[in-house]
Length: 491
Image (cartoon, rainbow, N blue to C red; front, side, top):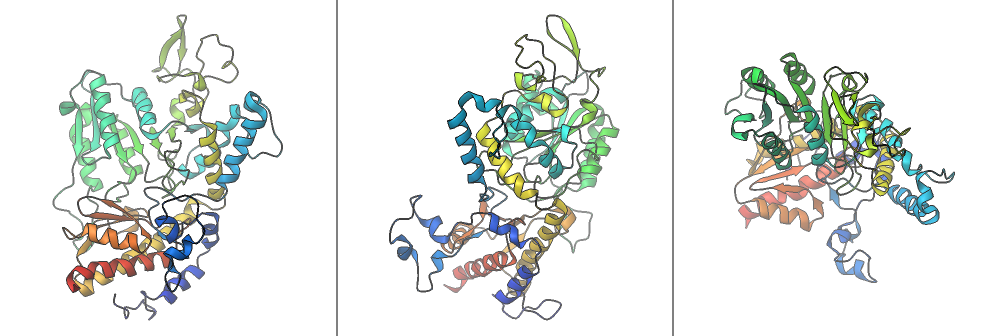
């Protein structure tokens, strides 16, 4: 690595001293202490429990293996909040000591509310993260299941309006969900799916890395298919390239053509500030195991704008559910947990939806999952999305500077494919390796306790999460990465 590259103030940006000085200036650095950072030995050990003498087995002369790993994979799975064990343990104690009474009985020394209210306890903090009114959010299900539920409500093809616009390289689960919904309505995906594909040429500044799917191109495709399109479904952030979409602008444009707009926020939630209510987004879904740090396969969430739920007499939502009595609300696939609490346990088979997004719930949520959500949301409550975004821009900008400087000075065998401007991306940088180099680089990073993820054939994704990552993490990644890039040439 070039050790003489300097910042605008004459500092060596590749030095440990520089990175650590940036960390000392970080007002959110205390939040890192609220997460369990695996050590390098933890990653290599083949058991959960550390065996006697095992630390020495991995430790070198400088005991590097006892050090925390460099974890830059929050875009795939976030780290565990330390407080999670307290919340989950309290949930297990509540179940063990109260049994079925845990549904309704208040326990004064428990951070967990009675299970009948646990879904309400996470609504407000979750709404703050996505920029919604509390009633517009429900923490429930999983991302793809929630997407199916909301497409059942909002994709209602009629006459010519039968198409769904989706990106051509969407995450497979989104593609499968849309394709199956189209087939469910007896339509042909080859006709009813419009796939957005990157343009070969960009109209932007050639000196600046442009978004693979420019907003102007997306708007033009919407215009081209406007009269035949029922729904636009796009990701807030594209999982592969890391592109951040102009959600407000795309939403407004599509809606001006009479099109419903939904967003998959898997890589955006907890990553970038959003204002779903103010942007007039129709619906959105997300998972909670990436930047939200709720654990692998954690419970998901959804957003439904209040314009669809605030008025119980919506004219376009007449559905007869029971005994021929017409109830007026937006169409949905209903379940008992979406029914009003005042009548939920009456067992009279008359569906009266809970106001807001909660009325789209189907089954009672897992109390264990909700305990994990309460734990991680308690960390988010100690800061704001604006503060996290400021730190994220600084971290990712520093990482980009390291990568680009080395690339310019050494013609390194990689290129960044994530758009260059902060307004076009979140925390993640996607780096495309020279063909055939990926396995070697990933193996070298793994050996040194640097955790990123790979997307074959040639891309690694590096994501400094502002809740727990540091400038030193970025510098450490670059130290190992640059050596790995040189080794095949040097040897």
